[in-house]
Image (cartoon, rainbow, N blue to C red; front, side, top):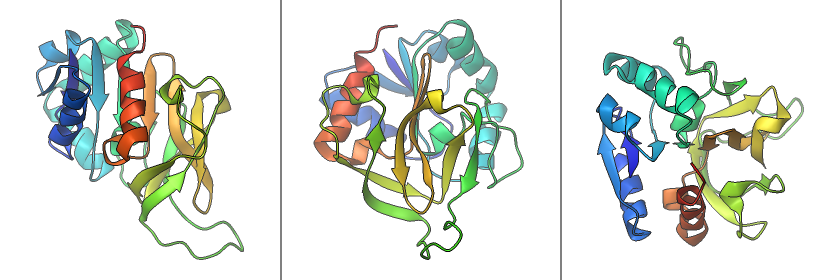
Length: 206
């Protein structure tokens, strides 16, 4: 079963419903035992970095997630804020992140001398996926995905960048480190190619 981690922020049930469309069982839960017993995990999120990390800590979920992901190697997909929580921390707040990805979450700002940016970045944009990225298997290059964010992930290690998108700066629109996957865009709002990406996640080997 896929467990959508409930930290009290974001469109948790809409993500679970997309898996139901794929005829994959998914449950929303804040129970550490359910997290440790999952076949795969999804960490969505909409809202502030500190609020999400604070909720995870208060619910006792950080230890469960670390055991599930780092020790048991259960595949996990972070979506939007959920992917940002994988980093060391965010300019948006002061709490440390999970630290699973070697990078930081920073506010989107225009490049020096570049055009003014409208922030948050809202709407459809393309990405460039790394060759062999399993999340994008079978999806044609140049497809558009739906983004809503003011902060973005910038990785120290380019090997952990599964896809890039440019909006002012070029940022990681998807990450991958072993069994840890993330998408800055919202696959649940990205129509058929977003659904295809979620289906690819369900097919990952444990």
